Image (tube, rainbow, N blue to C red; front, side, top):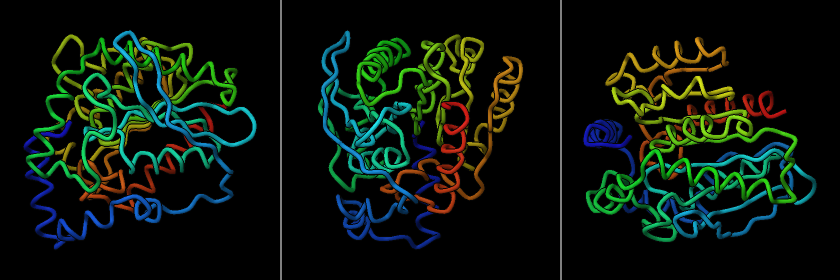
Amino acid sequence: MCDDNTVNDNEQYLQRAGRLSRRQFTALTTGTALSMMLPSVAHAVAVTEQDVKIPTPDGTADAYFVHPAEGAHAAVLVWPDVLGLRPAFRAMGKRLAESGYVVLVVNPYYRNSTAPVVPEGASFQDESTRNRVLPMARSLSPETVVTDAAAFVAYLDHQSAVDTSRKIGTTGYCMGGPFTMRTAAALPERVGAGASFHGGGLVTDGDDSPHLLVPKMRAHYLFAIAENDDEREPDAKNVLRKSFADAGLPAEIEVYAGALHGWCPPDSRVYNEAQAERAWSRMLALFDTALA
């Protein structure tokens, strides 16, 4: 997950690369600009989108719901990164729906605030942003993730756009990476595929480490790992590989060269389009087989 090491790594990268100023970056990561940054979907289908409210044991969660305008399709539950549900994740959710999936992008911080919890153009590099989101992120627990996941999947399964004969997929970014694993382990009958992008805390020394949940899963997996995350935790990928191999579950686990933690969302200051597109294509390939 994002921490001081991430901030330092990314700041050094931005300085070396001579990246955009904060004002330029903010201008490029607002509303319409975000959708223009993402490559278009070949043979995109027309979609329907709306903001929805979902009851949970702890209240009412707000979320972005988008799906093909016609027919019933496999569903995907999207857990955002530490900055939460915002225009970048709406754009990513819509893009996935245009590829033929029913997509629910959730606000994991609904107990504290409706989305978005940060202004457009906010960066984890900024201390004020970190001071805003980290207390909310730390208030989440394995238990809250599981109860939320059950509520979100139940919501999806009651939507006419969802083909309930097909398995559900789940994706997670940064802190959302381990959330996908807890979702897959808690709902093994429904979750058939999971994808973690620069996920943090996938392998820990704790008794509640996400990797210990693999035997409870039935999902096929993709782990797209940032190079600097791998440098700090070089054994994590090997533990994941062994865990999935021992469980007899397919898992594609790869370190993405030159990609820093946070490289996938288009509003990230370390967004790496080439590697983000490669990770996106691997996710679509996973869903194409595991959610068939």
